[in-house]
Image 1: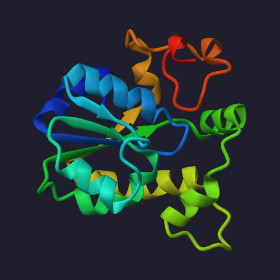
Image 2 (image 1 turned 180 degrees about the horizontal axis):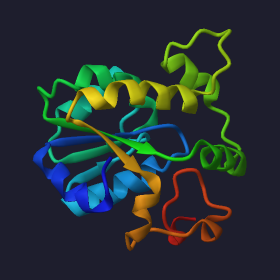
Image 3 (image 1 turned 135 degrees about the horizontal axis):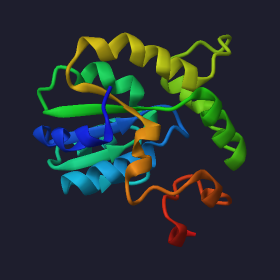
Length: 176
């Protein structure tokens, strides 16, 4: 389990994928990691969850890519031929669900299809992503878990009550 103080150690990797369930804090985690490392930050809007997005990521060095839809790609990145760290932001499921409700996120069906979950299975994608991560993370040193709460010490952190009314990818007050 990573701590905030461990973030500079990610500098031994040329690329960092920050992923996890939607609404787990991947956006703020990715921005903080990129700032601390002095890396370029790219989010899920600049490189989509596709083979083209993945190829752009792998062709770039000194970059942090925030994309919660790329959890399923983790098995292909774990061997580290591309010098990639995969950081999974771990957040309490109750907090994830409250965040989903707060912004009205409705993409779970799409996320479930990206994880190749059968249509009859009703497990939420956030639960499935955490299950998959618990199976993968202990096996590979380039897979790292970052607890969402440990980011609260960062100067860019904004307390929950001050985030009311924010957009889904907003991380600062002046981004409204």
